[in-house]
Amino acid sequence: QDVVNAVGTLDWRMLLYMTCFMHAVLLERRNYGPIGWTKRYDFGTADLQANIRVLQNVLQDNDARKTKEISWAPLRYMVSEIQYGGRVTDEWDRRLLVAYADKYYHQNCTDPGYHVFKDYPVLAISDIHSVRSELDSLPGHDNPELFGLTSHAEMAATADQVQSWVRDLRAATTPGFESGSNAQAPVTGAVYEIVAKLCTELLDRLPTSFLATDVRNAIAKDGGPTQPINVVLRQEVDLLKQVLQRVSATLETARAAISGAVLMTEDVISDVQRLHENSLPASWEKGAWRAGHSGLAGWLGGLMQRCEQWRRWIEKGRPATYWLAGFRHPRSFLTAIKQEVCRARKEWTLEEVVLFTEISMLELADVKGPA
Image 1 (cartoon, rainbow, N blue to C red):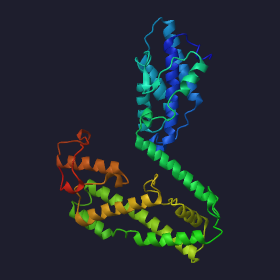
Image 2: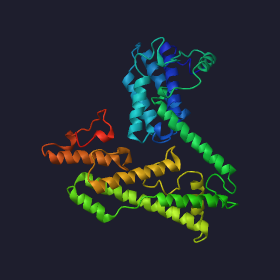
Image 3: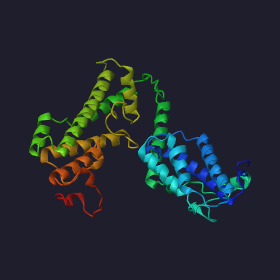
Image 4: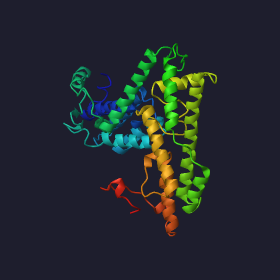
């Protein structure tokens, strides 16, 4: 209550509520994992208190100068770039903070009846107890659009959470398995039998690796190894070959250890546990792509699709369409496109070439070549 009474203006009480509301939104985005923030930043009460002090100093300075005009730009800069921005290391997260500051600190946010979002009015805090009763009347379920996200982000975050619960439940109910890093060997052979069968099925389905001669011949036919897009192709194929090698080695080692042909090490036990839980062995995501909420089956499906994309490219030449999500480094591919355009038009520089997106009504089979 002392904070509420620190400045005796309506603007202060409304902006105090707005500051607390923005802080809650930043914290809530962490529940969406990497969709919310690329890293889990430790925004805490100290950050909120620091922002409140900044806001208090701005309004007290205005009161001393007998002016009601708030300097919004410096206030937004202090909040986004200094107070919260001091913890942020990713450039896209920093841009997001700037966008939040623009949304919550502007000349209209102190207007009577202003709403941050539908059903979320800005309250003029006068008494802590009355504000708490007002907060209890807010919707029980927050629309993800309140945080600048979509329903798909909410579904993905919920799926990740459910998968974590299922994984913990399996760890708690499977004989001989413990959650966390202290996994012990199964008491019975039932789990071993299931995983051994799974390893055999996956090894039978696993695509064959790429031959270096096939890759070299495909690149030679398409302008040679110095073409930027061919450089990307070689990099992507080399990365995928490493992933295939790790997957194959893990499955073969697990199957051999279960049969008693090799020693059952702690790493193998961990891999067996993860395979039984429908999750990825630790080494598979290294240098590859995240499984997300798709689990083992979805990740392996992505592996098959990536192998098919590169194999079709090697056998039939450069395709007319590309599955951008199938690239391990999609930015390298987009940069390579710009480089090839600049080489074709020598008077253009890389800085002048801009990529843009155009939504079309074409189906994949309708695309026969470049537009």
